[in-house]
Image (cartoon, rainbow, N blue to C red; front, side):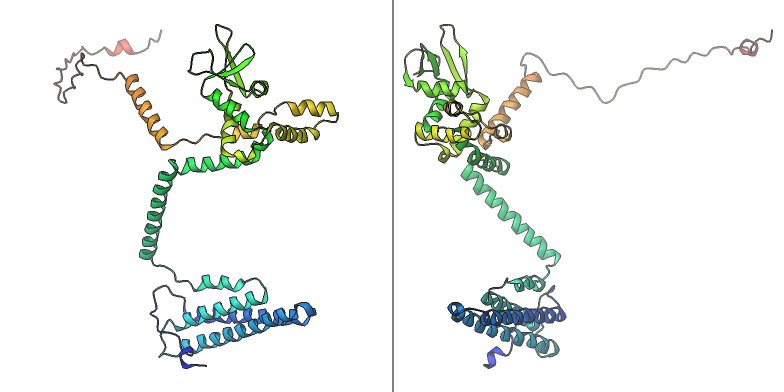
Length: 370
């Protein structure tokens, strides 16, 4: 072995480093694990068939080589701990090297690399100042990441988590709706407040409040969404009905936007998906077809768990509105009314009038005996 491998490189010991006894124990335990892995590799090679013999033999030789190195470094840890000429960090270096060889021996044999857990025992314990410095650095990095996330998403941590939960909900419930992109477009028009029903036709008004003309919207999809209570209708004076999303329809629309992959390509695929679900609930063929033609409602768990995330811009606007409402509720500023004058701190006390009454005779307060 070359001379430069017989001695550990010079390192400076730091406060909190493990003791030499701890390093020796860890190195010995690593050597035991490495030898065990080499023995297991040899046993596997002896029991192998001809097809895997070459691979297992190579693994056995590799594990044996790493086990020998682990034992050597464990011996050096004991030698360097007793040698006053060696640096105080030499046993720690030997123990770390022995653990590395043990991990490689277990990996070569195909065993679980449990030797890697020994590295935690060799970690240096931080001082109070170092721990505080590391904690400050961690908080600074978290603050920087939060600034980057807010700039990218426009939401704080709480609402980003809420958006992630909504995406998970969408992945589990959008496909069960049996929708196409056409159903989403109908609901989006209703969300804009321009979807209306008149003379048996659904149309998108060119302007909100003008219920005349406009682009035609799918009559069948509008009827299906209304029958499934994803839409609600408000009757106007001229018998026109304005259609808007119901609370369930609004949640279903938001989920469909989060998971468009759950939508079907065409009406036929959507019908087949609904028919497959209805087949498990109905026995008669006619009942299955009738159930497949109708849109199923959104699952109640999705309705209860969905929470719309609020962006930072919406939070600031809401705070400004709340502040303005609170100012008006408290009276606001009246330029015609002068503010009340403060009460002076020093107030002269009025003189106290003391009235002296003559004493009451004792006979008047004593009870009568007859």
